[in-house]
Image 1 (cartoon, rainbow, N blue to C red):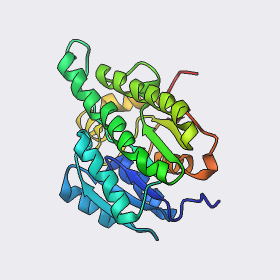
Image 2: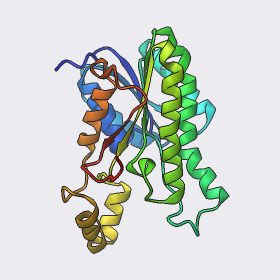
Image 3: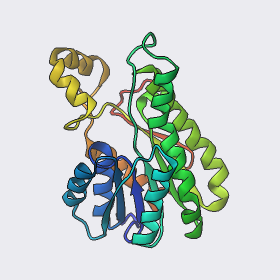
Image 4: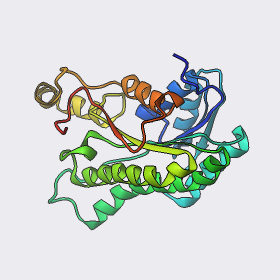
Length: 254
């Protein structure tokens, strides 16, 4: 199936490793021109070098938790690749593991690593998307945004991202800008939080997999990235405002 992404320009935030890098790699394989961004310039450079595809791949060291950083990534897409068609808001991070440890500072910090970067990048991207006559904005949320679970501040932040996507989807439809969210389940990749937990507590993680993951394993980055790549393509043109679960049956919500 031709996804119709050849020649499109896409930004993927938080894309120096893990799910973000996987999405950028998948988009490039479909012929898209991709802007990767992350704070660590060395890791970002290695990520850019790892991607092979017919399109161009550009790395922009930036902290998209700041408005200036968000604006710089969008400007790079327009200046270096000629415009912008797709934005994937993937950057994020967790916080305190229990409510007793969560306070206002923790919640503010986690919102600042998840919700506000998605808002800032999306707002910075609007003029470029409108100039193209429309486009796509995707929020990479979490199973813990759809239902209770995980660290409480992360739970709140990812739920807020899903709500933001729904609100944006209704308001931006008039501009031809399609917005939706994706809720990955627990996904294992080198250097990620589940990788660390498996190494630190193999027995506990084996019990988690047995009780929480019906397929008996963690998800993989390509399993998330391939779905996101399809969803940002014209083939998914009627997916608007939805939150799409990609979790191997982990979630229990309808």
